Amino acid sequence: RHGVLPPTLHADEPSTQVDWSAGAVELLTSSRSWPSADRPRRSAVSSFGISGTNAHVILEGVPAATPAREPVPVVGPVVPVVISAADEAGLRAYARQLRDVDAPVADLARALTRRPVMRHRAVVVAADRAALDAGLAAVTGAAPASPAR
Image (cartoon, rainbow, N blue to C red; front, side, top):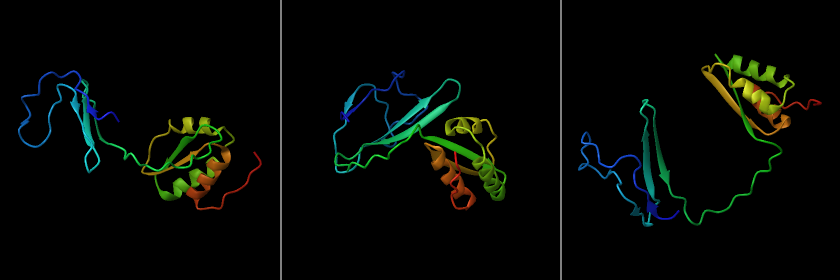
């Protein structure tokens, strides 16, 4: 947004284990101007933890003339409800069972995070029970029901 590449944190000198002369990758030791061009600006960020945990992300600038989208109305907090099963039939059966569970959507979503992840998975993103039931119906391949809740 500001057209500036920030300096690298916690590294003052490039590693001697990397051939920095090959390619266009370099360690930024100070802030640098990052002017706009006729293509999107892209940058890679890597983080290496002492425990062996590594994270890598590629960032791309957003075009200035991005059209605004209409906001999606939200009834309550939108949560992902993640379900999984060993096979497709089991996934559909589990989705049918969940349609009968009388619990708030957020509580159900939280409880399902404790289940083991299996090969066949589905995610229903819902803010309320009607959206959850419609999503679960889609997973089962059935028409959405209109239960009295």
